[in-house]
Figure 1 (cartoon, rainbow over the protein chains, first blue to last red):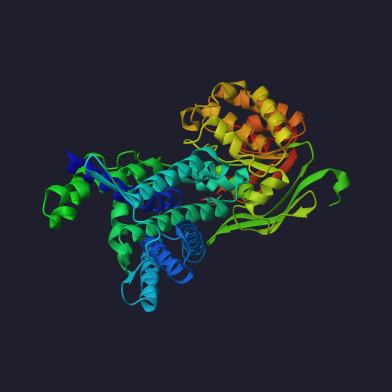
Figure 2: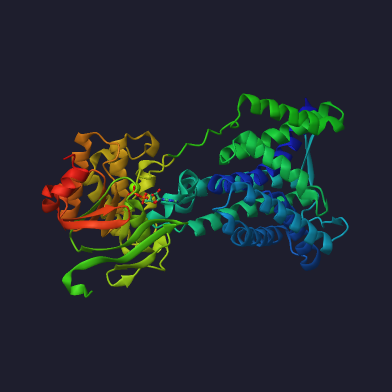
Length: 291
Length: 240
Ligand SMILES: Nc1ncnc2c1ncn2[C@@H]1O[C@H](COP(=O)(O)OP(=O)(O)O)[C@@H](O)[C@H]1O
Ligand SMILES: [Mg+2]
C-alpha cells in the first residue's frame, strides 16, 4: 500500500510534466490543425535555459524558471513567424516536415554548443518528509503544485479571457475571426508563446528532477507528450492534461510491477488499445465538417 | 469623390483573381451613407469575392475607398475597427462558443465600455431570443437564430456599414421576411447596408439601389424598385 502511494506520487510528478508538454502540442493543433513536432525540442531548450541561467548567472529557482519560459516563449513565437506562417496555406504535410526540420535544427545547434551531457545545478533545497512511510521531497511538491497552477492559469485564460475566446474561435473557423476585428496572427503568436513557455516550464522542472541533460532529451519525452495529447483528444486542453497524467500513471505503475524494460512497450500498447475504442481520444470529438 | 455628397464607400475597377481564374473583372459601384444597396447575381458571379475584398480578406486590384480612406493595404481586423462589419456567407457562427461569447468577441477592437453595454441592450432589443439563449453554444442554435446572431455580432463590432453575404440562404420564407424586416430597421437606425443576394426578389424590395453582377461584371444598375420590374432582371433572376 505504501509502495503504491509512493509510486502514485511519482506518477503525479511525471504526469504533470507530460501534461505541461502535451498542452503545447494540443494548443497549436487546436488553432492550426498542425502538429508542432519541434515542441519536444523546445522542452529541451527550456532545460538548457535553466542550466545556463543557473550555472552562469547563479539565479534562484523562480527567476530561472521565468527567464526560461520567456526565452523559449519568444523562440516559439519566432519559429511560428519565420518557419510556419509562410506555410499556412500550404498542405499540412509541408508544415509537419518543416516542424521536424526545426526540431532537428534545435538539436543540432544545441549539440554544437554542448556536445556532452551537462549537469544542472540544484536550485531547490533538498528537503524530504516521510509521512506514514511515504517519502515526499520539496521538489516533488513544487513540480506537482506548480504544474497544476500553470494548468489552472491556462484553463482560465482559454475559458475566460478575450484571447482565450479568440483561440477557441480560431479552432472552429479561422477564416471568420478577422471579420470580428480580431487580429488572427496576434492570437496565433499568443498561442505559441503560451504553449512553448509551458513546455519550457516542464523542461526546467524535469532538469531539476533528472539533472543530467543532453540535446536529444526532448525526442522521446516529446513523443510521449504528443501521445498524451492524442490520448486526451488532440486539440482539447483538458484532454491533454488528463492524457499526461494517464501516461505518467501507466508508466510508473508498469515500471513498479514489471521489469523496467517493459515500461514503454506495455504503456504504449495500453494507449493504442485505448485509441482503438476512443479514436478521437478521451475528450476529443470528430472535428466539425465545414461545407 | 468628395465626402459632401454622402458617398460612404466607393469601389473602383475592382479586379479579383484566384490563380488564373478572374472572378471579378473590374467592377465599380458606390454606396451612399444611409442606403441599402444590393448586389444580386447568380451563384459564382463574384458577389462573395467582392465582399471579401472590401473586408480585406482577399488580394485585389483596383480601389476600395471608405470615408475617403483607401483600404487597399489595411489588414482585415483594422477594417473592422474603421466600421465595416461583414456577416459572411454561411453566417460564420462559432459553434463552440456561447451566444454571449460570440457577441463579446466582436468587441475586440473596442475600448468604450459604456457604449458596449448600450450596444448589448440595443442588440438584445432587436433580437430578444438571443438574450434568452446567451449561455447556449452557437452550434445549438437554429439556422434563423444563427443568422440573427451573425447580424447581432456585426452590430457589436460597431459596424457603421454592414456587408451581408446571402443572409436568406437556407432559411424558410417566413424567417427570410423576418430577417429582412430587421435589416430595414437596422438601416433606419443609421447603419448603411451592402446586401449580397441570390434571392433577388426580396433584396430588390428592401434596397434603395441595386447592381446586377454577371460573371464578374456589373451589367445593370438602378433603384431597387426599377430593377424589380426590369424585363431583363425578371427573366434572369425573378423567374420570368
Ligand atoms: N478561394 C477560391 N479559389 C478559387 N476560386 C474561387 C475561390 N473563391 C471563389 N472562387 C471562384 O470565383 C468565382 C466567384 O465566386 P464567388 O465570389 O464565391 O461568387 P458568388 O458569391 O457570387 O457565388 C467562382 O467561379 C468561384 O468558383
Ligand atoms: Mg457567394
